[in-house]
Image (tube, rainbow, N blue to C red):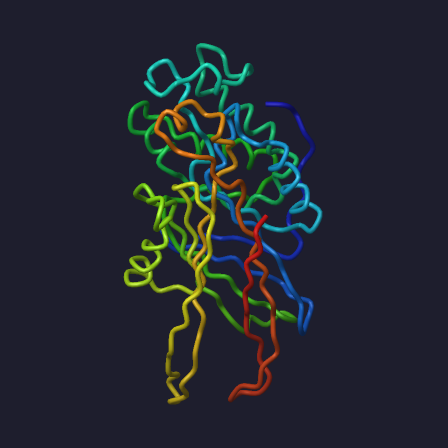
Length: 297
């Protein structure tokens, strides 16, 4: 790995683990109406020769400019071009990964590429491509990548296949609201008609959250649901639930395996999640609540 200078730590956000399957992201807000933006990605397949590194770099450059935390929810690696893999394709293997130490090269070159964004990386979690490598070769690509990036001063955490992120709203040193985000890399094939939207209904019945994020099927879509709740004081209110599916960063129109399966091109990109601290009047005086808005990358 190339020698670099120590990465600056983020100024307005901090991540920590609170449970084997839960994390906390504390956001500092300047005041009323302030907005913070985080970047949600999945299925980057960074090492694939068809990964749109140009578009990924453009998005990460923007995240770096605004000091936004970046989350990569599984299949950060493709790792399908080893000699053992029946899906391997010479056209999908980049030149710098041609060698007897294929898995080592994936980790070291990926760490080099992401080092300029080390200070923005909040979490890289595992997907089915990483679990396949761990199952067959007893190598954890995600843990190795995170270890190299943390050596460069990154705050990045190696995340599990699924979990929670509790997002805290901190205005003037006072945490006044929390938003629950549930992430899951994804499962199933995502049919051409439903495009994974049925999974949102299943997830809603199994997990409690305000925002749900997944990937895996290389589709990008959003869905919003409104649920009615009642406070402990007997006040009825409505609250939105947001469901986001991140797509891939790989151009699959040129991918041999994808084309041979009769699949068409897929969207490129993930989501920006804008969080706004809004001043409200509560039973204990002025308070702040978090509202969210999803914007495609």
